[in-house]
Length: 344
Length: 288
Image (cartoon, rainbow over the protein chains, first blue to last red):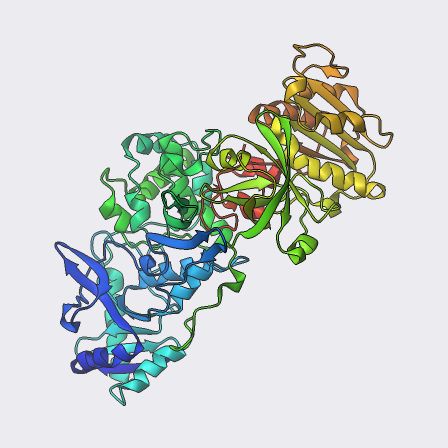
């Protein structure tokens, strides 16, 4: 991969150059939290943010999106508005880029989702590295480092950024600066290695995911799920903040007094009672315990079978968002302890 | 992954969510709450080219009401129209039942894996349906009958609560005379009298036929109680778990493996199903 160095004093100028590639969006402070949104001025950006409330998925899979207008004469007409917006999303952490890569896989496949893909291809991603806080466990989920899914990735080396160029578009961004970036020197590599090792040791949370699918299988009937079911309030916050939760519901609306309407999709959650209800009323996951279990099972077991890795990226958002304090890292520890007890 | 900055969004030519316009050709009352809708695509080309496998389903849009997965009851051996057997149970199906011939609906599909008909060829085929379970199995029934020479013995066991609840009753009663098909129909009870066929529970029909499990595929569809009792009996008869095929129902919003609702274990009913083997069912928690 092409690797260059951007001296920190040129960052502001680089940002101004990026405007020709689209609206600049990035992490900004909002009260005590951080959110991704369009920057009003470059100085708003907070590259030291721990995590945003919502992950970048909102750019590709909006919380609510109109898919079709229905007209009597023309039938279902796809809605294409808002898809031409070109966005440069500046300052995405590795875990969130990993999340985007997972969504890219889900929304491709045998039936590519044209709405997702149209939005996705108009968003350029510029990654930035980060310092783990008390909720981060991306290292355990093998998502603390990404090699694809970004156009550029900036590694903070203090007075400069080591820059990985991931795509031709990223290369165009570099070239548009007319020589702000310089080649990598030996001492840049040495500094990168030093900081990389330091970051690795900074993680306070750890979960072992090897053979986790097998443990989930064996602990399918664990009493832990009932316990979690009793604590979960079914709010679905974990799904909303998850970079890889992609379930959506579809609704049709009719304009009053007309035969015209629209079909929209909205974020859904497998924690909601209605998630597995079929017409006639049967609910295939009627108990809250079964729904909590399903969520973790799908992330940590189901996804591995289908895509070869868990869909959890260890971003820590669900740990922070859950009003009942349900914590996947603790769940993994509990399941492993139980397993250990059985074995000994 | 990203294209050049000047790349345009793809034309929605291949939009998998695009419902295609179809007309209701005919609506036939099978039982009071369950009608058979015959649909034809407005596009002559679609009507001529649409092909499905028995056991597949379509996503049916009723303008203003929404979209729902509906299994296809007609056989691909009889193309040009689609027959959907629909019980009035929810918002979309209630709206569909209010429509009349020539009214417009939206159809996309076909989706799902369908029955592995090529694998079934040369084998005995045992169809076991309870109640509304006849809807997807009717497609396989007519498929095997229309390609009769490709299959060995074909048997249909169908149970309904009463004769009045039996779907496709006249059609199936007339098939009972067919020499190349064993068609055994049963009802739990016959309150009005006059039922000339069996009275008794569906699994009891298995006592009345000769089955060679090693060369037979069983296709089962019905409410949960049917699975509970029929599967047990088939295993006791010596069926291998991957020779028992089941058609399952789940909530679906997309039909194409995205919306997440039909997920069971690590499979999507819409992509990997709705036809699963009993072995799948054992390995996928929550499937049955």
